[in-house]
Length: 324
Image 1 (cartoon, rainbow, N blue to C red):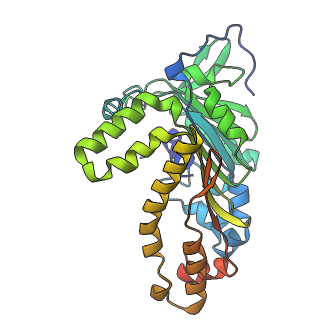
Image 2 (image 1 turned 180 degrees about the horizontal axis):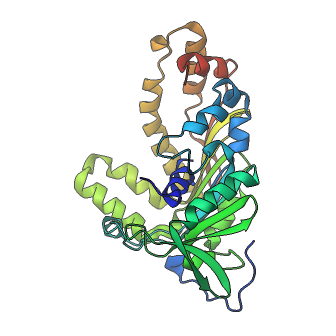
Image 3 (image 1 turned 60 degrees about the horizontal axis):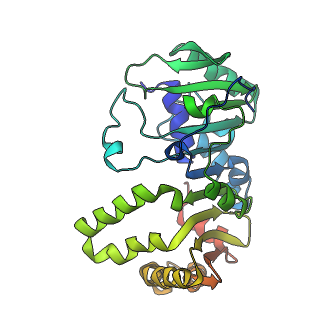
């Protein structure tokens, strides 16, 4: 039986102002968040494509979530951020009851107070109250739950979950300077994910070393991470640009190398979008326009891939996934 905590965590991952405390302990560099995410479910389900696919109703039966504990369709937005450990081995110790190898927080906004009230009632049955810095939090009593995870009600429609070091910060200033700078460059689309690549330097180098040992043919692509300072991804189901992937190069030469490497990778994507394999002419047209857009654009140190939302895209997707 999944707990209410776990149900909420599943939704936060599928998708990703507290009162002041007397003292704010500065975070260490490795504790600062390097990934930030924002999933606006209202924008997604109310988009033309969302309506066509009936996503609002589909959300009520989201896999992995017990509808008796929480109605996922009542969630309007999920956002937060997290740090990353210095090495891959830290993830291998994420067993039942173990401490998480990162700091994180996730705020969940509901579109009605009843949904949150019902969820809090269920959560209270599976947790105990703890007082930290004059604030009361819920802490799971399940021995298999991640150690140190807390939750708190912000208002009648907002719940927050996360680790103590993040949730007990009144200012919520938990991000690296690089992540904050990159976030400001990101448009307010339905889905936003930003990574401070420079901020995860130690983990990045270990990942590159692992690729060199296990997939030597792919090492050139892995090393492209050394060329950029950040990575930004957005999805906008109603906009002219359906998907954007942007990165900032460390200098213009390294940005150009990164763009060239992306173009090499994108060749595989273009092969998978062969219009000749489309089920009909409308789908072929959409596939061709998306395939033609699979090209890295370079503007100084900025590299971007911008996938358009071609005319007829919604109808083609709806046809490909009837009864989704």
